[in-house]
Amino acid sequence: MLFSSKKDKFEKYSDPLNEFSNRELKLGEWFLRHELKLKTIGKNTLIVFCVVTVGYSFGYWLYYFGYGYWQDQKMFVQQNLEFENYDNLKSFYRPQNIGFGQINVFNTVSEELYDFSVMVNNPNPRWLVGLTYKYIYSGGETPISKTVVLPGSQRPLTFLGLKTEGYPEGAKLVVLQTEWLKLDSHVLPDVTSFVQERSNFTLANFKYAPISRVNGTPANIITFLLKNNSAYGFWTADFYVVLLSGGEPVGTMYLSLDKFKAGETRPVDLRSFVPGLSVDEAVIYPLINIFDREVYLAV
Image (cartoon, rainbow, N blue to C red; front, side):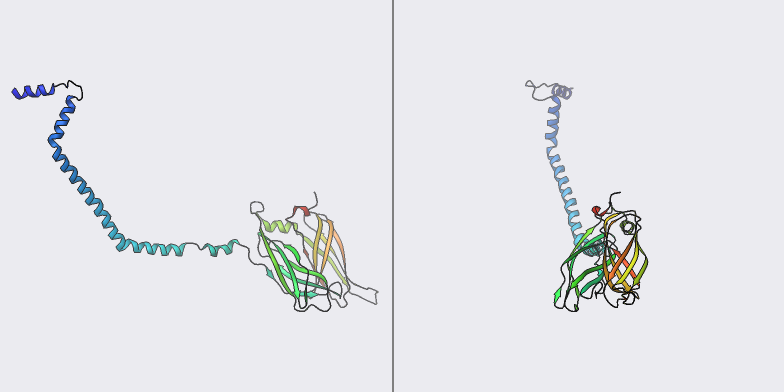
């Protein structure tokens, strides 16, 4: 009864200053009684935590330097082997080099005028190429010329009508500048069809009559019909006419037709004053830049 009475009095104690409650007083008493034990538990917990974490880290570093590091090195080597070399891939995205055939020098229209010609091939189906070039030969050179070669096409690269004394020996082509233009696949998804539809010309009824004193013919006469099979008309349609004999080129002539309408057929009459010129076939090569909107006749 004595202790119970003291306990009841302690629990009924009221702080006259109202700074803390009975419950806070009891918690404070409990803390003071167990302070040493709480410090011991906290210290031991901290020691265990440090031993576990530091020990794990130290063990992992030993594992990494003993095994993991070498595995990383192997992985880096493997990544280099598997990773694409973009320098090598550039060849797939840039245009292929254009190709050139054999250079020929002809007398096509006159014995006094020389024509330089070489076949050029653009193997790139999505690249338009502009060329600035000239021909050089022993003792001289031609004026600088510019032209455009359509994607996936071939045509003569010429300089026609050079007047010089004597045959130009050792003729060589010098390309001064090459300008590439890639055609956007979103604008032109099928460049090949685009080119074929707008470069569709056919030559028919080819005839050749050589110079003949007997018949009173002072010039070689080349005639044929040229048809525009495309659905597009052109303000000016320019062509090279390559003359062949036995399948080999013997001359190149320039042809220009004004207002060549879609579906139209034009008679063509060309003259050459070179004696002994033998021709049994002719091939036409359009020179129209079909990617230039200004070349088309209004529909």
